[in-house]
Amino acid sequence: MIFSVFIIGMSLFATAIEPASAATINVTSTMNNSEIQSALDNAASGDTINFLGQLYTNIQLTINKTLNIITSAGTILSGSNPKSAVFSINGPQSSGTKISGFTINANGTGILINNTSNVIISRCNISAANGPAVNVNSSSNTRIENSTLTNSTTGITVSNSKNTKITGSTVKNNKENGIDVETSINTTINNDKITNNAERGIKIYNSINTTVNGSTIKSNGNNSTINLHSTGGGIYVQNSKNVKITHNNITHNSHGIIGVDSTNLTINNNTIDDNHGDGIILRGYAINITIDTNEIKRNSNGLELDYSKGTNITIRHNTITESILYSDSPTEETGSGINYGADYKNGVGETIEHNVIMNNQKRNINGHDTSATLLPVGINWYGVTWSGNEPGYSVGQDMFCCKVLGTPINLVLYNSGGNTYTAYLMDVYGNYITDLPGISVTFSTTGGFSKTVTLHNGQASVQIGITQLGNGMVLVTSGDETAYVSFDAKVTNPNSGNGNGNGNGNGNNNGNGNNNGNGNGGSGNGNGAGTNGAGGNSGGSNGGASSGSGANVGLAVAAAADAGSSGGSSQGGSNGQQSSQSKDNSKTAQELFIDKTVKSPEFWGIIGIILLLVLIFGVYYRKDLMAMIQKSKK
Image (cartoon, rainbow, N blue to C red; front, top):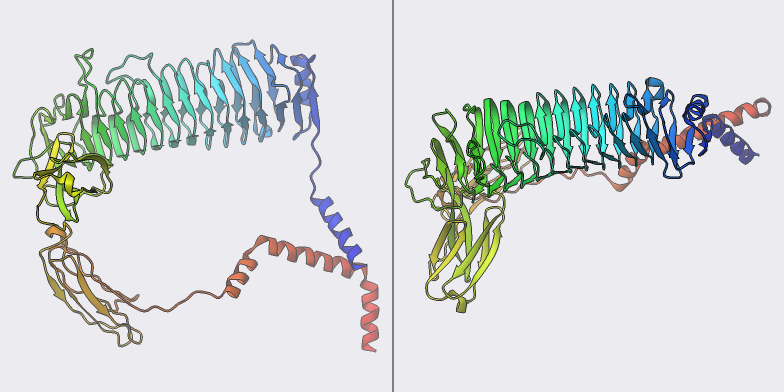
């Protein structure tokens, strides 16, 4: 009986929560536009409209409710009116509409999404002769997925909208822009192919929080005139905030990326190669700009800095190489890794450092056209040997021009023992540089050995057989820079130091914990010991550093409230050992199981069903239960 009550209760519960099933309405091959529109108007919200025919002409349909519009026959919809859309999805009542699987050839607009939300366009092939393939206006949470938008005025237009996502789509061969984002918020363009659009691949104007990620942006803007002031190219950003351009392949465009009057523009981890114009251009005002870890190769200039107002510009960890000097551009400076334009003014908080800037056909850094009197840049790798005596200097025409004050990174070679030779990168201050992009270097000897490797984290090692060492020099080269040591040079540990230090300190934390430590330089090793008393922690100090390149402060193991003080240190060194004991606060397996179970929504769902069944059981057998209670009292 209890089991029967359980089954009945579950059936009633399932019936209560089950939604009414939606109908499927078939559109036959003989129906014209008026008949199809009537079917849409008579459908209930949530119904599926299934097109069975292969071709429908003169189509101009309005959707004013939530519908799922599909085709099981690869349907082609043709629209003849240059001022209307094949599908117009209008108003909040059409929220949640889905259109998938169609080929749409429009004379006007392909699909208009207006003043609505949560519309999904998927697996459609859309062209529009006199309008955008898809026009998203004053709408939210629109998704355009796995579709092809081609041969239109613009592939996709997004205006006055928010939370638009364009994913896995191909946008190509459009007469103006591939994707046009204007006055919109939170637009995501992810994993798309945006190619061969006449003016720009992507235009972002007067918008906030736009992300372009993981996309191929190729051969856009090549019908535009290519010069410093042109706006054609792969991605054009103007008067916008919080734009992120990451992990894209931006190639063979007129320009790669143009940023004009932009704030919080991030350009990271992109490949920006083989653009006929400049790889990246910054114009107008530029505030909080980060250009980091990009490969920028074989462009007219790698970077064109032409902003009249710049604040917090950070250019780091980029590879900027092989910029091309064009003989057909006599009035434009080309062929430089970084070129300062005529409108450039020195920025506030401008950092250009730890980049690889080499093998550019004209100059690595060029300041010929700017009116600025001095162009300070940070420490970068230029692939040439520095022979000066002071950090911060000006190099000749082959490297810098005209106002540039720069400091290079040098290549250093050590005999590290066991017939192993190690190359490092070091600045003129004696600091090792470990965060540059990978640099190819070639080790060679007079004995015929040659091996090309890549510096990772600023260093690389090779082992050379005795017969290949010869009796001369071991060399390592990169670009025009060469470092060398004698084959029998003294074994050197570049991490050794010449400092020494010691220190001790005592402290307690509501207990009797004491600490002490000693640090010794010269070998880059420190030592220290700590004890953990009742209520107190302590730890050792450290000392010594690599090549005297900088001081490391001694470390101590500390409790939450300064259990002990750290030992002293001198110039340079590696950390000493430290130890402390800590209480194991991990939970038992039973406790973890209970925590997980109690927090599980499935657990509470089961509890709810049990309570519901108890209630049903109690109501159904109320009289019997009351009689049993009365009998028990007697």
